[in-house]
Length: 333
Image 1: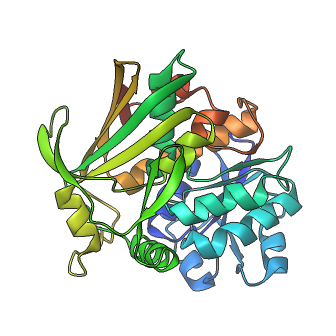
Image 2: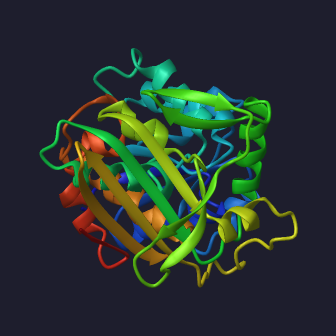
């Protein structure tokens, strides 16, 4: 540790700042990369290596990633940024990780780079949505080689969306023509009907809460990539689902602070047997930083189990990885 330099594309964004702070806390060198040089120079670390680059200028990305040992993409919408930044990371010969919660962008990454990234390491959705749920389902599976169902239920005390979250949501809605997505029968389905509403019995501190079923998050892309589960369903507490789409909901505090609490409750079922695992923490945006930085550390140290375009549970020892997130995210089960 302390010998690696990691390029963070989108370093001045809300999540990007958390990622930069986490990397510095762990002793990494940071190359702060982004389109707006003024915003880069406004970051609160005067010793950062600042590198201006745009996804519209491949040469600028090549210059920005020169000398990097890995690239973390924290700049959405990932429908716009993922492919050019992955291309640049592959040209540089270094691992790529992103924090994309956009289902379509993640599906594109798996589909378009499967052959081109052979032998390299490309990990999309290494974040709160997509990465954490995948690791939890994988850990809950244990010695099972298949399961009938996986359920990932999110309880958020509140959800003040960032500008990036709103932009990504807009892009996703446009790409799916207003339809919604679910994963059923081993495949992605597009539907026009309303989301089902039901109650979910969460562990403390939430208890029984109303949730929207089939409130589909990136887990339905990452989990089935490597686990034989024909039904993968994600849920979101109604209060959070309403807040994230309400225009009047304010963004997170400008200082990055948040009192948001979360519980992620994962249930996996096979042949009438049920296994459960629970994660607890604060602030879904801040919690993405230890996830992606722990991942980049393990990739650079060679603690991986696969190469190519891979999801978190496929490439890492899931139980060991989850244990390493404490006390930022505590996992029990």
